[in-house]
Image (tube, rainbow, N blue to C red; front, side, top):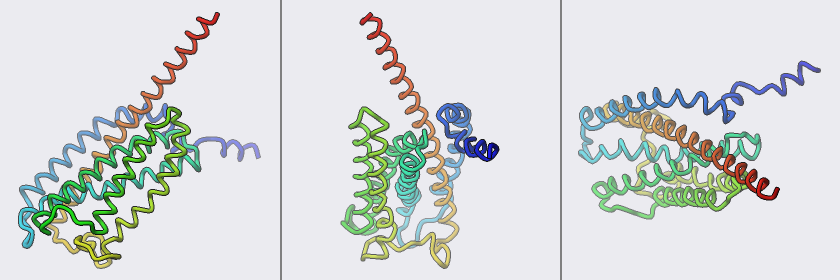
Length: 259
């Protein structure tokens, strides 16, 4: 019984790594190698995308916008998925870093979503003849951007970050209903967007000459998100520590003044 109780109380390796103090220790030396790998993968991806891949037989050179648009569209949903997991960590497991991860991811997700909409508009004009159309995928992605902005506003509306974390977590989980709408909108409604051409039951419908730079750029953008997320989380933790020290100093001054 004693051994069992000890094992239950003993934190696992993930809990130890994710503790704020441990996170600050291991994340700092990881930033430079991660930044270097991200830069190298970006360089390779850009070389493939703009110098070593053919023009599309229908879209011509405008197909190269895909190498920016698709990774941003992928990250707009992937980052929200990270926030959903972090929200569960806040509400269910009470994880000490969950709300930090969610708060730090929101501005990044909003940026990737805005870039997806912007690059999609640039791609749509020569392809479809219009910058914008209120079809299912465009509209649901715009709604996702508004959800991101609303979550960011909620974080800033509360001085008590612990209270804000619980409220934002609930809003994040409700907002997750938009993700399957984005994913399946091209199947549910008539839309300008083509159906899935990368992940299909029969395999990718794109030739390797286009898939190689696309996958490389998707990896590069994902690594960029991981790098920026780590930096943002570290900044958030340092900001909270500084705020706590400031309150403690103010309380000491108030005590001395009262004495």
